[in-house]
Structures are given as C-alpha cells and as structure tokens.
Image 1 (cartoon, helix red, strand yellow):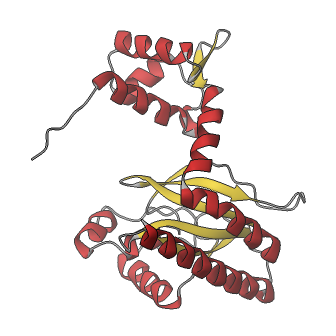
Image 2 (cartoon, rainbow, N blue to C red):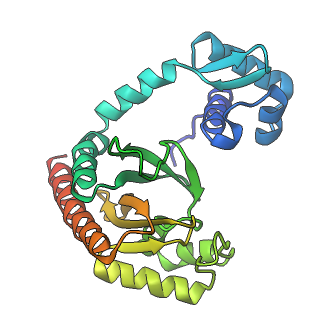
Length: 258
C-alpha cells in the first residue's frame, strides 16, 4: 500500500476556502470559521492571515469577516480553460440556452454528498431563472442528484436514500420507492423533468454527462419557470437530449485519445 502524504495546514486551508465558497459562509468571522470546521482558533487565524497575504481570502476590517479573495478569480479562470470538459461545456451550454431560451447549467459532484453549479449560460433578458456558479446542494435535495445516484452501485445509493428525503416543496418526492421509480424512468428515457419539486415556480430538464469510468461525472440542465407550456417543455427535452448526447460523444472521443 502506498504511503498517504498529508500537509495538515494545506488540508485545513482547503477546507476554509471550500467553506467560504458556500453562500451560508460567504462572509464569516474567525469564530464562525473555526467553529464550523472545528479548527483551533489560533491555528485558523494563522492560516487565514497567510491566505490573505496571497489574496486567496479577503478581510473586511469593518465587519471583521473573511471572504474569498480576488486571486481566486484568476485561478478559477485558468482552471476552467485547462480542464477539458469544462472548456468544452461552454459551447454546449451556449447552444442549449439559445435553443431553449432558458438558463443552462453544468452541475458537478463537489464532495461525497454535495453538488455544485460549476458553469452556466443565460440570455440577457430579465425574465429568466437566475442561478449562481458555486451554489451547493445536498445530493438528495435537488433533481440532478438523481442522475448521480442512478449510476452508483445499489449499496452506495441506498446509503444516501435511507437517510431520508427532505421535503423541499409540496411536490418533492419523499418516498424512496417513488424516488427510485422516477430515477429508473429517467435512466430509461435519457432525460429528467423536474417541476416545482425543489423550488416552487421553477422547472428543469436535465441529462447525464459520463466520465471515463462510465459513471456520471456531471449533469447538463436547462432551467426555467414552471409557467412554460408543453411545447416549450418538449423543446427543452429534445435539446437537452441532443446536446447531452453530442457532449458525451465528444468526451468519449477524448477519453480514447488518452
């Protein structure tokens, strides 16, 4: 077995940056950060001050709070350019938005039980659903999670589902059997429609994007208001299916080259 190498300070710094990326902790005090991550207060302060020196975090002297720093914008931009599937996703998301006149997004799994918006495209019109890159959700509390669970082995899937399904709206599926039925139907159809299940007044159509291991690496989706008529929904379904298929074909070609 290979040795496991760890640098505790680096690990703690990464946890701090991930915490500050969440909206709930976007502007947090030293105490809030150290308590949330269970890091010794003095250790946490030293790490924060070091991150501040390299512009990875910013400190507001008026509110005594820390937030993500400006240099992370540059790092994020470079990462986006260098990660193949993110670079490729940009054109697919633009096409999806143009074809549907809806906000389009790419969703990734950021940790064992959390999903995050990692990219989006939207039209300039005012009447649209706004979403924020970096916004995170528990895997069982948003429809995209159904795709990740659908391609897990059964034991792993049931570990999530047996913890219970939280009711987000009156339309949220909270029965495991019903959830699994919808999951299997989506897997068979190649797309998933969610209406008012997680946010009232908001609907989405999504499809899976697979990684080199044949598991779901991300989810592509378009999101709009639930007032969409059936013709608009049908158009969204066809566009998502087509663009997801093309995206998967391109990725499969890239994997073969590696």
